[in-house]
Image 1: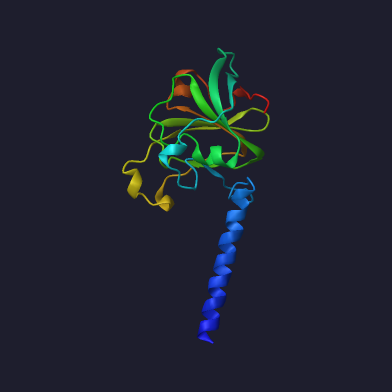
Image 2: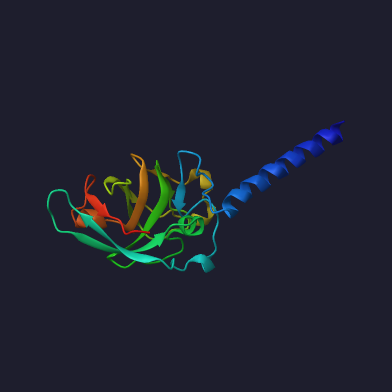
Length: 188
């Protein structure tokens, strides 16, 4: 009887594992049906061979609501599960007016982390209307190899967002971009 119970538990665990893997293979975010999506350095472990940039690039224009100067950012667009999960992992530099735009298919609360991300970043969460709803500074994690995923800081959006724009830390402050300003997102 004990052998049968153990076999059933192993079978059930295997089925749950396979079902979880199937979602990622279909291109869905592992947490797409929850209120949290972890991106940037994503929930999966990547290797240094995945550090190349996404093929999609565009320009995002940031427009201050107070009438300041329009700011343009050349962005790599991360819009599939692989690109979103990889984010800016393993990069050692990011040009001054460049960044990465994470484009999701729906608007919800977003959560990013800095696993295997070596550059200090700032992130702007942007809603479906192009309004910046939150800006946060994100710090690289020291001793990256030994920090368990559960202990990594999460940078959670203050409001639901459809986009996230990562740039070098301080970029938004230096250019006067604030919460409430507008981002012109390129068509995908």
